[in-house]
Amino acid sequence: MYAIRDCAILNAWVDHVRTSDGQKIFYLYLCDNLLESLDKNELAAILAHEIAHVEFFEKNGSRMLGVHWLVDERAAQLTSPEGVVSMLRKSKKAGMNSRAV
Ligand SMILES: [Zn+2]
Image (cartoon, rainbow, N blue to C red):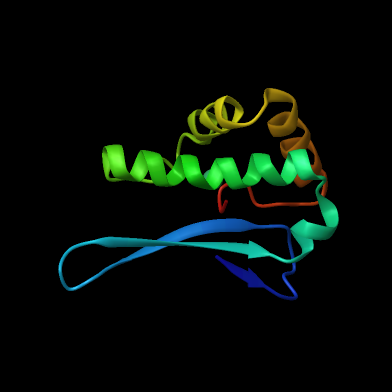
C-alpha cells in the first residue's frame, strides 16, 4: 500500500504487475487526504471497494470499472452499507472521480 501526497482530489485505486513467473502483485494507492477526510467506517468502505476491485479482477480479469455499483455492493458486504453510502456521499461532495477509484 502506498500513500500519495498532495492529491488534488480524494482518490484511491489498485493496480497490479505480473512477475516473471506469472504471479500478480496488487498495489493499493491512497491519497493521504482520504485519511483526513473520511472517518474510520468510510475509510474501511473505500478499502473494501478497492479489495472488491481485486476480487473482480481475479474472478473476471477486469476491475469492473464500468459497473462500480457491483464493486460498491461487494464493499457493503465486506464492511457496512452505511459506511459505503457515507463514503460515496462524502467523496461525491468533495469531487472524487468515482470512475477513477
Ligand atoms: Zn472503484
